[in-house]
Structure formats: C-alpha cells, structure tokens
Amino acid sequence: MKPIRNSAKAVIVQDGRLLVIRLEDQYGDAYVFPGGGQEKGEELKDAVARECLEEIGQAVTVGELLHIREYIGKNHEFAEWDADVHQVEFYFECRLIDQKATIFEGSSPDDHQVAVEWIPLEELSKVRLYPKTIGELLQNKNTSRIYLGDLN
Image 1 (cartoon, rainbow, N blue to C red):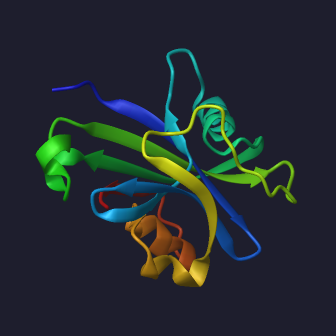
Image 2: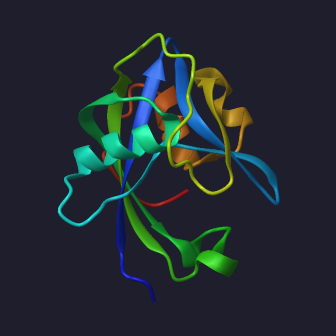
C-alpha cells in the first residue's frame, strides 16, 4: 500500500461562483478543487498557494482551514484503480489576488486537466464535482463541519 498523502486544496468562491478545474476522463467531465500534494518541509498553506500557481496560473491569498476530508480509495467508486490510495485533504478558503483575472493557465496543470472554470454555487449539484459533499456544504452556508471523514 502507498503511504498516506497530504493534499492542500483551494476553495475559491467569488460572486457566488466556485473556481474549479475541469478534467476529462472516461466518464466525461469532472470537476475538482485546485490543489495537490504537500511536499516535504512545506506548510499546507504554502502547498495550496504553489498548487494554485501550477494549476490555475493565479496567485492566491490563503485563509482559514474550512474542511478536512479523507479519501480512502477502496471505499469509493474508483476502487478498481485507487484501492491503495489514502489521502488526507485540507480545504482552505482562498481568494485570488487579482480578482479580475480572466486567464487561468497554470505552469503545471494536472493530468486530464482541460480547463479552469467558474461554476455558480446553485449549479454545483448538476455537475460531477469531487468531493460532492464539499459542494453541498458550500451551498448550505450554515454548515460549519471541519472534519468530514472518508467521503465523496
């Protein structure tokens, strides 16, 4: 089994829209939060800032920790190829430093990344967003759960 991996993710909401990365896979379009793996010696806030530059090509101000989610691959729909994955994801509230930015071209996009898009919060339930539960929490602003456990 692979070692447990930490990942830092950005939750960027502006004007009632969520900034997401659009991926294409064998099932069509999927949407994920910008972010990725923490490197040795790197604080989580620095990891999310670096990952935003790499994936969306924009600098961010990193705010408060919103959620902690675990992903234990063997328990989810992609268990066929993710069974040995265990990742702990830290979701931080972030803001674009250039809030009028219209170009989102990262220096090192994710595999299968095809675009960076804004999705209105009220439409999150209509797209394949991972993790779906965080999209639901963003729509229900009264929810303040931090540790979410192993969910999708």
